[in-house]
Length: 96
Image 1 (tube, helix red, strand yellow):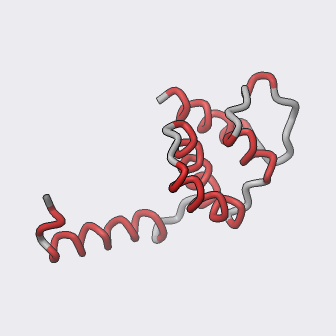
Image 2 (cartoon, helix red, strand yellow):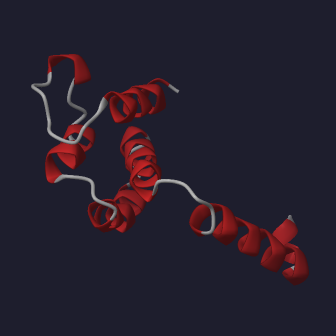
């Protein structure tokens, strides 16, 4: 409904931009969660848009493939750079 109000739509867009890009948080984790969500809901558009952003944020290809192919986290060999926090975020996002 707020899209019927250009003033409100602009304010919401500005808030979204500030939360997404203007806060001191780890872009790598953000992209990890977005990619996991995109994969879990089979959203190819979102995946295609965010896979390069994930790579640019420092996600290794091995980690992206874990998400892309829904690999079981418990049976994975150790992947360099894929720490416990990131694995927990992937698991939580998958279960949510």
